[in-house]
Length: 184
Length: 120
Image (cartoon, rainbow over all chains, first blue to last red; front, side):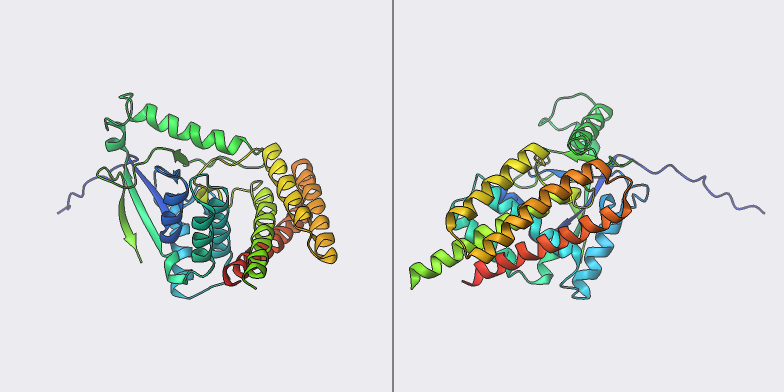
């Protein structure tokens, strides 16, 4: 007798996925209050993108680096450099705060680079009173346009197939708009 | 003594900012760190203006002559490599490798001066 299995359901593209570094999230929140920009894709394993725009690859790599204490890894140096640049160019910090945060980054333990995978419910974002009621498809187009606009500033960069940029994701307070689904 | 420490710390801080700006200028050409950027990437013109400003800051600090000569060379080389990369980066593999190595060197210097700033 044949066992009826359901047919393969389509994968939802109504969620956004991104990989963030714990320390960098804290620094970005001080440097770019209230909402640092977040890059995301609509699949966790965004293998059609280059590695650096694939949350799955970023997570595996950063998680491995932290667990194996790979201190000199390029990803760690890139994250540190980016954080120091953010601190140095922030208009929200006093010189003393800058010095304190830079020292914090320069002396940070590797464990503080912990990888976090965030999931963003795009339907919730699209229906939030914080944004115009234009529907999810239109919002997605806007988030893709944000990404394209940034990428187009440098002709040598290439927009990836599954790549979006959100500039107003609420990341603290009463209306946090993401959930951490993996942290190690 | 305390004043000397402050002057040293400031010089290390300015050197770190300069070298990290050189790194960021080159890094902006690639896709690699895009997802780490939490704000707008400055245009090429803006980045060069920032580099020039940071270079002048170092000139005003009156660093040791050998160090300043090295800073000046690295500034010029970065601008030159950036321009070349814009023109031939898509097709010239050797140039891409050269740029990657240069980027890593500028980044290492930036991070090392940041470390020195934090302990001085």
